[in-house]
Image 1 (cartoon, one colour):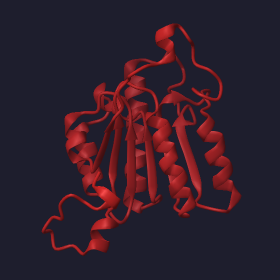
Image 2 (image 1 turned 135 degrees about the vertical axis):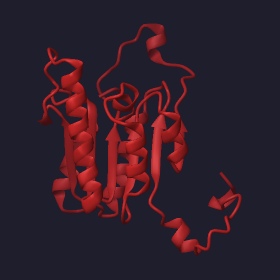
Image 3 (image 1 turned 180 degrees about the horizontal axis):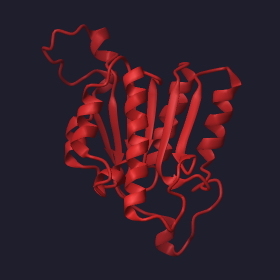
Length: 201
């Protein structure tokens, strides 16, 4: 990052400084280390503070799995003090919490979730999207990566999108404006310590 937030180079794209600054961003949080979703939810807090409508789509965690950020963001969204928050997750509308489901069932439900994201992008339902753990349906071939990239590139209006998950596809990385690779230096689990309340959830 350049000193005092100044860009290292200014492209000759015909945009004013204001126009360039306010471009909607596609952000990817990837890498093997924890914190990818947490960082995305931190950005969602900033979006909430701006009064932006927020859509969270959890593509892997089931409806039975509660993350601490969900309770906080839902409460904030209902407070009327900032933006609204709508939380979609597998098992609420999507049905793949049943462990007996086949890969075809899971793929169909991932496709259903992505189709909802596409509809919301088309109608500009939200200003800020978190597609949590969405790299996995792409990696597993449940959604088409080229369709995802084209949809996100062509999205109308001013919609920011943050995608989290390990092993982000190079095509998604190429299309993104901001990519964070979270790498592990140390982790308590290396010393046999399991996750704990208030840190992992």
